[in-house]
Length: 93
Image (cartoon, rainbow, N blue to C red):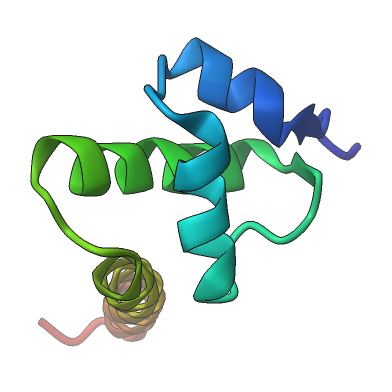
């Protein structure tokens, strides 16, 4: 079952982004959030982008780097979980 996609504009309103048009244009210039609708996970990325830009003063290129590193970290954490489970299943400490 797929989750409901949400319009980016709705997410930006919910997040109370001050200048939605400019905010989105800067992110899209870096290749981020190009679709008009996003999955819930992408809405979370949009929330993080808002915090980085508006609260911490990070530019759009910095947001792209942070989001990329976050995805890599999540993938590595998943690999570590799989390896830990495999070790447990093999009976080795």
